[in-house]
Image (cartoon, rainbow, N blue to C red; front, side):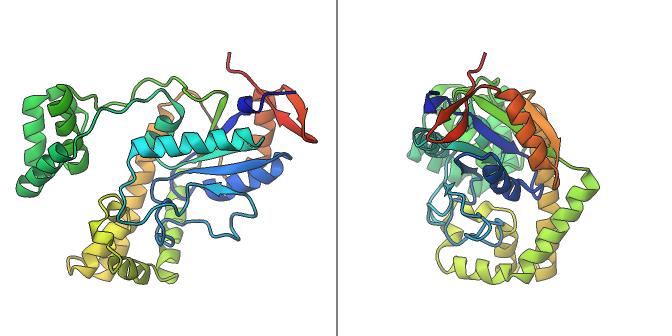
Length: 324
C-alpha cells in the first residue's frame, strides 16, 4: 500500500485566462481517484472579490473541494510567507486523507514559495512603516534611488515603479544588511511534484483576456468594487492593488473615466499575463501542454507516464512516485 504522504502534487501553471480553473476541475474528475484543488492565487483568498478575480462559484467547482478561497477579509494582508504556510498545510491535509492535491498557480513567486525551499527574511512592522511613509513622501523612483545607494544589487532586480518591493527590500536591508531580489534556484521542499504549464498563442491569449474583461463589466464589476470600497477596500494593502480593482478605485476617485478604467484593466492584465509566462518559462521542471479541450486527456496520459507506480488504496488506484 502506498504511503498517502507520497501522493503527487499536480501543479497547473499558466497565464491569466489560459483556462487553469476549468482544467483543474476537469482533471480532478478525470484522474479517477480523489483529488482536490489548492488555490495559489493570492487574490482568490479575499471574500467579496469575486467578479474581478474570476473566482469559480460553487457550480464551477463541479463538486471538487477547493482550498484557500474566501478565507480573508479585504483589509487583511496576504503575505507570501503566510500563503506558503497555508498552502503547504492544505497539501498535507489532502494527502493525509488520500486525496491528490491539484495546485492551481497564480504567480510564479507564490507557486515557487509553496513548492520550493524558500525562506523569508525577518520583518519589523515599525521599520516597514517608516519606509512606507518615506515612499508616500518621495515616490517610488526616488525611493528606488535610495535603495540603490544602500544596496545596488537589490535595486538592480527591482523596477523603480514597484514601490511595494522597494519598501520590502529597504526593510530587509535595514534588518539584515542585505536583500536578494531574485527567486532562489528551484529545489523542492514538497515531495513528488509534477508541474505542468498551459501555453497558447499570444493572439489567442489576448483575445481571451479581452473577453474576460468584457464579461467582468457585464457581470457588474464596477458595482462589486463600489460595494467593497464601503467595506474598506482602500485600506487593504494587498487587495486594493489587484488588477481591475486598482483601476476602478481610480475611477471612483475621479482619476479615470469608466471606459479608461476598463481599458487599463485589459492592458494591465495582458502585461501581467506576459510576465507570468516569462517567469514560468524559466522553470525547466514545468512540462508544457497546449491549452484547450484536449489538455485534460493529455495531462492524464502524462501523469501516468511520470507516475507509473500505482497501489490500491480504499478501492481507488492511487498514483505514487518518489522523486529520484
